[in-house]
Length: 194
Image (cartoon, rainbow, N blue to C red; front, side):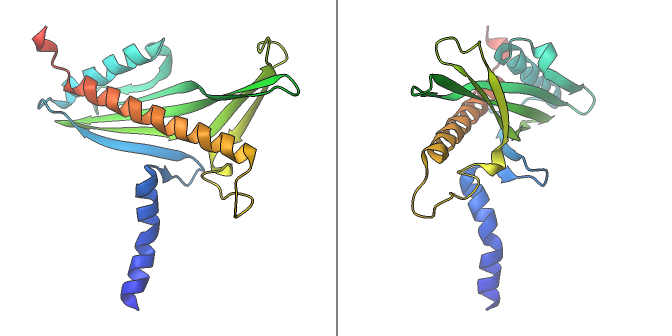
């Protein structure tokens, strides 16, 4: 009986690990990855690489960086993953674009970094599909309230709306995984070889 209770207690950890994210108490999701540098770099060198990554990834890194702590070697930045998903309702001539605001935290230690993307909501921008800049409506939707994080409304199938959120979430996780790969490349970059 104790073994069964122990396994049941571990089940949520397996589910979270399988999904590559954790659910925070404040209603947000965090995608976390710890990366080792293939070149043994100091925390200062990795901090410089992280700043270089932000400079090449975001249009205005100075505007994105909220905290840059040189002493403790961590950076907090806020950005937006734009156009992660879009769909058109041709019956009423409306197009909806999904954007995802995020907070990025990078902590640097000798030889490794910890990267955490925190997501709380989708921002849905809906407008006239011919001229989306006209007649725009913006809706912010908590990410935990939508499928696949939330349970589907019907147990045997998902609705069209739930499918759109599922596709948006899959695109989001793919984008984050690509960003993890780019960060890994940046910390393995040896500036001395040019």
